[in-house]
Image (cartoon, rainbow, N blue to C red):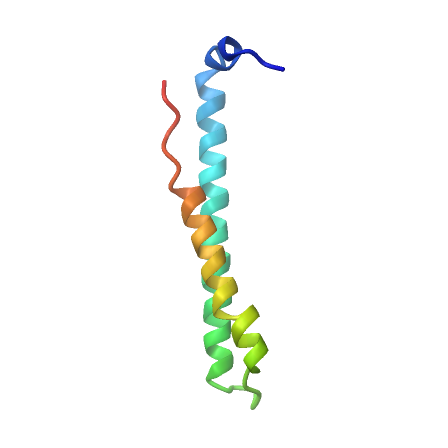
Length: 83
């Protein structure tokens, strides 16, 4: 188990790179959520003659997209590590 002093002596550049990587992951999750919402919206426009069912609306479409966007926003909105 690491001691508190070891965590404080961590390389600041390594900490910053880790932070940026986590922010990018959050941004990717937000983009994936937006793609889910857009594709679900397009499905409601009936380009293929099939409308999503009620179960797809409740569990798959907008809620999944919104959840991905929310999780991504929380992850991407992380504060920068203190120096």
